[in-house]
Length: 326
Image (cartoon, rainbow, N blue to C red; front, side, top):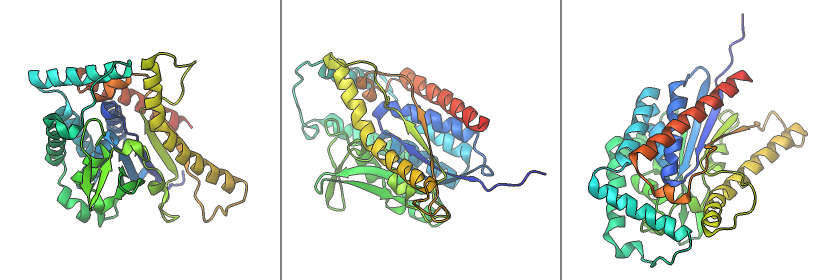
């Protein structure tokens, strides 16, 4: 008779990256389709920018229902974020076109989001979609249960530091702040300070997920990474340089945090830290594995978002198959 094992404590970190985080939604939906409470114990989930939408959706769905409910919320949010109607299609084409031209080196007039009506309309649309699926007033009550940690990453413009909102402090404004890309949206004011997109900070937040008592510290960290880690050759054209700069900006802080976790693992292996006090955390990356132009991070075309979600489901299935084979 096989010995019963406790569920593996898992934390999930969802990298930000605009529309590319539809890939993350696909990953999470596939994970949820195979979720088994006897095998996995979710101790925390974090996200920045679009990754925060996904982290919140999975967290809220699991606490108010089950894995199927969480998957439905993910699907609903991304369906409602997609382009809807001719005028929205025109706007989407215009925004993605400007982004591509800018990355190609064309001189694009610089206009503050506060001088245009569209950024505020876009922010209100995101707010409406999130509040359609998430009752933010219930989050503090949900946190009183034996709930996994929920972490949303932003940057505090005034203090010049990373700032995360965790558990009962997660509000719709915190999630909007995490997605407030400076050239697209105005900063979001929270507790007297202005905040920008979490892409400038911990992308995604990891250290908060690791700040747990020994019995709750994750044994595995699953990082859903939308920005390519590696690049072949030298970027020489303006477009390729802009692409790679964008990718690196989303990866550098993540790699620093993951590097520290690996050092702690090594110290435990080397006997420099007591194994009975420090839990080793296996790091697993679920990577997109496909490169898209950085301008598509603002592309909300339904077919493109569906393609990303399907790619996410494929990568998640590959990850789960490999994990089960170990």
